[in-house]
Image (cartoon, rainbow, N blue to C red; front, side):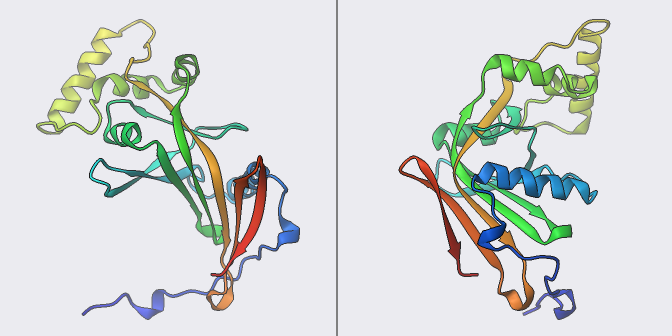
Length: 213
């Protein structure tokens, strides 16, 4: 049996997380850590793993990008006919995971999801680069294709179709908002005695609990 080289092991020494360091609201704590991740120059600090449940109850996960955050939840965008959308239609509960390696931190978030309004999706779609808008029309996301040429042909067709005019949002493209009821903030510590502190929503307020590493 082969194993990963022990030389890849590292100690976590960047910081610590104590109860006295926490914001009272988990959204405020997230914004604090997110801003710190951005300030380090970490590539794509808004990249997050989205985990969903398939109809056969098996898990699925992929990286998506956090595009908006409000006091209700975390917003990402996709094709409503994609595999992830089918899974969210089957089971609306999902999980997000952020990993900020430069600060030796991760954040886990769990909750139900909902589609955002068409107007919210249209507002964001209008801010996308034009070629990204066109690719939303060209790609029947998650569905089989014969090869790369088929995608490039469809993209060329969309460029012709929308030549010299505004690219409108496809009906099947839009956003989801994950509505958290659980956050876990993880800070790497030496000797694997990591700090793990969670917030959970109970009786109309956020409670805080430390977890063993």
